[in-house]
Image 1 (cartoon, rainbow, N blue to C red):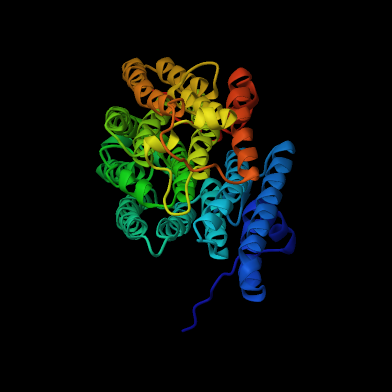
Image 2: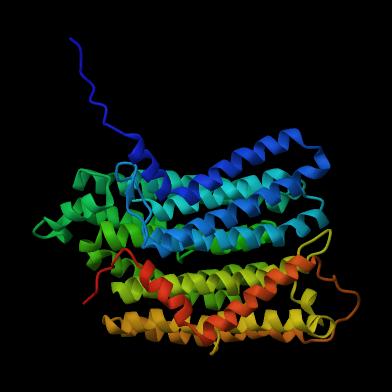
Length: 499
């Protein structure tokens, strides 16, 4: 007996339409293949710079394509509903394109100084950003998980980039184990959600759950929310699932710490907004309570833990934990105001956190990273502009007006208060006050006279990247509507409005 297999029709016009929806992702995929070919053909001494140039061109083209599609109103579903080119995806694609360009320009002088040059670094970074872009464009649980693993595996490799450094190898191993653990929670939760809804499509899951009389009484869905919530907490470095973060941040090379501190967080929140805010929006009563608990733990543990650190990289790890808590306040708040607040905060975080770690990367020597507070002593006197920019980044992270970090907190807090989460905002404000102490500690060392010789910042191009980040942190604070308008238009998934 022969079984007839129905093959769906896929005309060339539809194929071209679908390719246009994921053009930024396709550009990076082509760049990866070209980079690998160049690695085979060019002499050893020219490979890294050539692949770095290819990566920069790819990021610029991907970002330009995303901006062009944005200007035309955004795209729609592609590849049988597995991906999308809407403005939510485009917002993150522009975000990652900017992150990619800045990462290449900051990391190349560092890798040369540490004798770690290798074209594979930029190829793996391209693969990581490809996965992040694919995740933000995903409209199916299958696509989300594949994209999640694409960028996760790439980051495991980047964390262990320094083969001769046991700390780097340890960081990669820890991240691999913990990342796999978190992915397992997410996958099991996805499986239960699929079992309850009968589909992996985000819209299909939302419709299936919405048709239930009382979805919160379905034990399968509640367990799915808990499992995915735990997995998401691992990915965003949310307490009490944060223990891996300080060790991985400290052990990884500074450019990797710089890249993953921003990229991983943005990708994880894109996943949270898509799954909880869209697919499981009818279960907001369950996931809002879970994320509120994680937010409180993150803000308390992150800010208190940072006070006791003697390592700059560990301080930024605990700062990242606290920042995840603030962003979760916006997710819990919900509604379009909450989503746009989260997108604005992530855009602000790109410039202020990346800029601060970029300064540390520039100050790193040929043997060791800039990881001690004393390494910053006298920076404000030897290089006033660089010291001033680092000060600006730290004040922005602390939430001082009129910098962009202040408005990032303001918008997510407003959304939470408007939807009845006032107590959560009170905790967030108190936690923000605590954070001022350790952020100003960094500033104090910048203007403390140095004893002995200090490393000089390397790379004129790196200085330009840091300067651009500083200008954006200030300009978007003075004119926050420049970024807020994009965040509002990009707020595709609409979170539950709350009580």
